[in-house]
Figure (tube, one colour):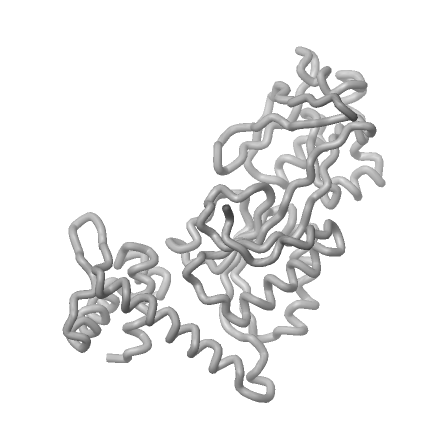
Length: 312
């Protein structure tokens, strides 16, 4: 039995709550994972997991052992990355999930510089706006806009996205240019709805001007759950959009979008890099988070209090 493989398998079973999921994330067969755990329990002469046909629960001894295993795996990672010379560069596979517009407009164009600096980091990047099960899907971190739904996650606030309201010239020629956000509730106006992954619904937007505040829900003929599709719908004239500056800037400059309600303000949207609370922040994850923070600082600087903290 390889004790490192056995400890790694045990940690993944605890984190995923499933031998099958653990096997998938480790790229092993379920039989191999089962055998590793059995051999580990035999060596330790203690029961680490309670197995039923429906779920796997960690025992009291297993929970204590799991905490020790996490520290040992973290120490091993630190030892490997602390070696002198070229091997001191962070290396290994990093699984991340990011919103599609952020990937297309900011992250992917900047990746050549990242890989030039960290050539031994392999990025597996999921591009989506869905809720990601970081533990079950073995994802190291996610980048998300808006307040995080999972309060147990550790997170670093890397940006405050400034928002504005926009519409395509074709839409304004057809529906007219509204002078007040309340007009978007009229029957002849339409918005493009964005379906937030944590609710599955299009949420109202809070806008303010001086002491006046209004929540705009609007009506839509199309609602989508992807940022790129949302922008495309607005450019096609299907309705009014609420966009962060980094998504709207080029289209305003080209005349494809027209800003609306210039004297009204929306609260900035926070952007976080989030990761599981029981995961060691490896060197490769640490440099990736720092890179995201520095990159977003060029577009939308975060407040000074946004360092790694549990969400509460």
